[in-house]
Amino acid sequence: MEFLSIALLFSFICIAYFLLRDPRQKGLPPGPRPWPILGNLLQLGDMPHSHLAKLAQSYGHLFTLKLGVQTVVVASSPAAAAEILKTHDRVFSGRYVFHNFRIENHVEYSMVWSECNDYWKMLRRICRTELFSPKMIEMQAHLRENKVSDMVGHLGRKEGEVVKIAEIVFGTLFNIFGNLIYSKDVFDLSDPSGGEIKGQIWRLMELGNSTNPADYFPILGEFDLFRQRRAVADCLHQIYDVWNAILRERREKKEADSNHDFTNVLLKANLNDHQINALLMEMFGAGTETSASTIEWAMAELIKNPDIMSKVRSELDRVVGPKMVKESDLPSLPYLQACVKETLRLHPPTPLLLPHRALEKCQLFDYTIPKDCQLMVNAWAIGRDPKTWNDPMTFVPERFLNSTVDYKGNDFELIPFSAGRRICPGVPLASQFIPLIVASLVQNFVWGLPNGMRPSELVMDEKFGLTLQKEPPLLVVPKARV
Image (cartoon, rainbow, N blue to C red):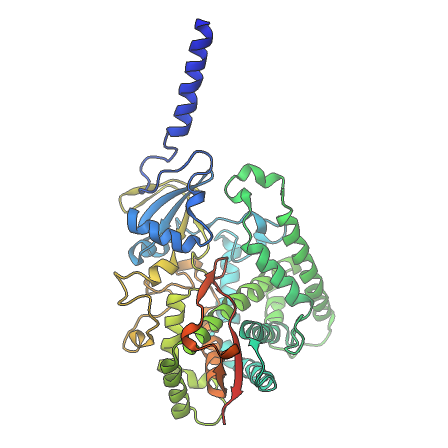
């Protein structure tokens, strides 16, 4: 009995130690005490970006979480973001790859998920000099303007009907990228299904937004218990089957192809099919979803604020007149550009950016960040920080009219597309077609809300995922301007 009592006491002490001990490594930033096994997972809720912003108010602009067995450091201020994305950019340039996307022949050829190695540098160089250079963007402006004109015509035929603006914009962006990538439309705006590729990419975005327990407990990654990784692989294979047929046709052509599209640029760079597929997938996926979300939020804010909508329309009438707005007009539309910036401040398309990973142990402020630690930058919290922005919860484009702050990676109080070597390479392109589409929607239509809803009643709730979507989606009734 004495031995049994000692054994039970020892077991109780061991269990109590396991339950009560702090599993965090020393030297990390402060943070909420984690629960055993789950860590701080229960504190994330269904709106992690918002909950993390509240935690920053208690624990500071740099704090630590334990998500399952993973250690994560969260940055929530411009200064902390600058340390991660600029001062220690190389050390923190590693990428944590979500388990859903750990697909053979994808990660190793991806520009988003691969390490910053020589292959990654080659892809960035191709994008910078051949795909998103000022010359290439200017040369292809007419393609984007034609697709936006198609969108305006389609909406004109929907006058008086309720439309989901995100779907129309998404289809327009699909056709913009379809023409930039391989010189053809891939989406029929009059067909709600949108075609095979659109359906598969939407499915891919849904899977990307789903939580995989293996991201918190890596031991589960070997089993793919919920078949999420297999579902992603199936989507990719179906998309790649379509693209491979196009690549095969292009390679078999004997004469020089007159198309100056992305596909020919990549073929001339001697990339193989796996490499081209991964890069095009990221252009289609990231370029359409994030931009469509930004445009939907911009239109929601303008409809909710009729005085601001009126100012944008007056600027367009004064500068552009009755002709269709073009990309060449955009530099002369400062108030429109300010509205886009204000939308990106309040509604960054990827609220937590994509997670970084420390390639080696590093000193960050007065803290020690261990190798392989994950780092998140809460761009949503930074854009709403009252220490940086006056009246941060209100949509006020005027704050950008006499300001040099921009979203292109140099101003860390506004980093919707990240910064440093991991900045989104498509920013030069997005900065053209996002304001162009918003301007065209404002210039050509008066926008009403269904069922007699007043602008002040418009719900502006969010749905968290890889992209920050409006919930519920924006439903509007277009009426052509006379």
